[in-house]
Structures are given as structure tokens and as C-alpha cells.
Length: 448
Image 1 (tube, helix red, strand yellow):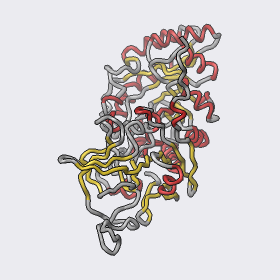
Image 2: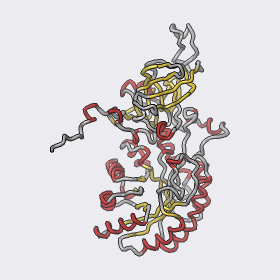
Image 3: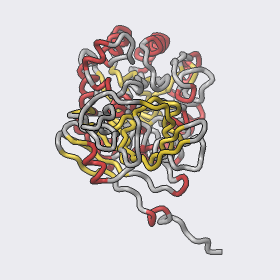
Image 4: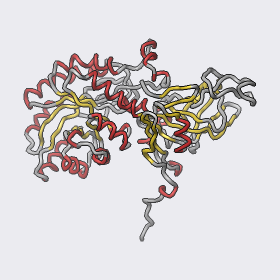
């Protein structure tokens, strides 16, 4: 569920009319709901209450400091994949001792930094990395806490680019090799075995892949608990969210009335609880998209309407540089008018366009929603049935809170968008819009 809803035909985020935010901060604008993020965190935390557990937010999903601070205050730990993410977590006032450090290509500088800051665990992705961390920790007269990322070879039933638990993926150590690698690690002077980790993918909407992966790795976890007194088993993240029917999914009634919908937090926990309870270990989870995905939207204005013999294009001021998921993955994002559009009526609109102040079903057109970037792949929707739109209309691209701004770029020398956070009836800027001058700020003239 989330806190985006229509009131008198206008889209609100919590108690803030999103039109007000757009007028105040401009567009494109990422707008996030604090109450939604905290609600998702609390629902997961409550559902896991019978387990000794820790929720480590996957920073990669949304790195804004204001959001990291929200989750820090809620009690979250953090799953990081770079030295930059560790820096952000520390900059947000969080404890590095509550961070797990993942990623297949950790650099010497990143490993040293993480050792100096005292991260809770390094998630080891290969034997080469294990040797490297042992060498660096030895040189610093430290012991590096580690967990092997074990690859269970499970089909996550998600997009191939975000499936990470199959044998052909670059991630982790094969389950059948893991025991021997742990034995090697136990003999290394600068290594301290702390746990086991897995992560099979992202945007997974069924319980079966999670359960299958846990049950495959559970015997190894039990063995390691006896041999090395490990502290934790991290099952990663990956629970998906609603992208289609995103606006409707904000209501609890939608979840109870729909025959088919993404896995709920409670359904997920009910499925994984039995095999995890039997292990008798602290369980770590690493959700990212689950906490922030439905908590954010991208606000954008229509610039032009263009019709050709084959297509009708709605050209907006946001581009693939602002939100690349549709272009990169072919991902679906629901797009809704910020003001609901009703049937044309002389009484409601002298122009015959129809009222924008009241909710209702209006005429629809099949359109492509596209951005201004010089790529045919710069689209947000193709052949999408939407209400008739006109230049100046404000649109909300739903479910944009995860892997949105963090994947934005300056392609076509377009400045990065602004970000704002809503809490109750207040809205605050949490990232300034990049200026044209800032596009070249870090460039240096050649001195030869």
C-alpha cells in the first residue's frame, strides 16, 4: 500500500497536493512519501517479530540522505555495494557496524575503508575476493568479518537482468563449493567467519523461489552453525511491488479484492518463516524496492502533442535520463494525470475539454508517452490507453521510488532532476535541481 490518492479529482501524496510540489520545485521532480516508506518497514519488521532479525535496507534502490535518515531512525541496518554507499550511510549518521558490504568487484580502497569503518560483514562473492580481503586485513593487523554469498541455482522468475541466483550469473559461490571455501576461510589469519548470505534476484512476486533457495541452503547453514558458530543467515531481498494498477494498490481494499496481485509482505513472511525458524539463527533481510518503490513518483509536464500517420505522441519534460527503467528493462510504470479528466461537457468546460476538478472516466486515446532525449528508446509508455491530454498537463509516473533517480544520468547534457519528501502536510526539497553550470563544474582543461 502507499499514500498516493485522489481527493476531489486531484492527486495527493499524504496530505500534500502534488500540484503544489510541482509548482514549487518544478518538473521533472521525484516526490517521495515518508509515511509509505516507514509503513513498509514497520509491516516487515512486525511480520518478522517471532524471529531474531535485522532489516538492512538496500541502499542502491534509493540513496538520498533524507531517506537513509528516515530508515536509520526506524532502526534499519544497511546493505551497501560500494564505498560510496558506505560513505552515504555514514554521512546520514548511521552506524557502519550495521552495514553488510556486498558486490562482486570490491576495490582495495573500498575494502580498506570498510575495515576502517568497522562494517558488520563483507559478503564474499569469490575465492579471489576472499584471498584479497585476507591480504588487506592482514596488512592492517585486522580481522575481516565475512559471509560467503552462496548461489543456490534457483530460478527467480524475474527479468533476466535482475536475476542473480542462477549458476550462470556472476554472483556468489556455488552451493556445492561453499563448504570447502568456508574451510579455507577458517584457516586464514585475518578472516572471521560471521554468517551466510544469499540473494536470488529482484522484483520477485511469488514465494516459491524464496522458499526453494532457503531450503537448498539451510543444510549448509546448520552445518556452519555447528562448525564455526556463525551468527546470521542473510536471505537477501527481492520481494516485488505493484507496477500495474499502482495507484489502485494504495488501498487495502484493492489487495483483498484482487484475485491476482504481487506477494504481500505477510504472505512472503508466512512462506519463509518455517524453514528459517528451524535454523535458530539471526536472520538478515535486504529489502530495497519493497520499502521505497511504491513510495515515490516522478512528476512531469506535457510539452507537446504530436500526431503522425501511425502514432500519437505525448512528449513530456522527463526523459530516459531521468527514469531509465522503461528503456533499459522494458518496465511498465502506470502513468496518471495529476488532475482526473472527465467527459467533455459545455457546462464543465467552455472549450469542450471537460472538467479537471472532479473524478470521472473521460475519453481515452492510444498514445506513446515519450521524452525529449534523442533516442527512439526514450519512452515511458507505448500504445497506452490514456485520457486525452494537452500541453501543460501534469502527469505522475507511479512506482518510481526505487531505481529511479539513482540510475539517472546527464545524457544529452540534461541536468539531474530535483527530489522532494512529503511527511503529513509538509513537503521539503531533499535534492536541488542540478544547474547548467554544474554540468561542467568537475571538468578540467587539458594542461599539455
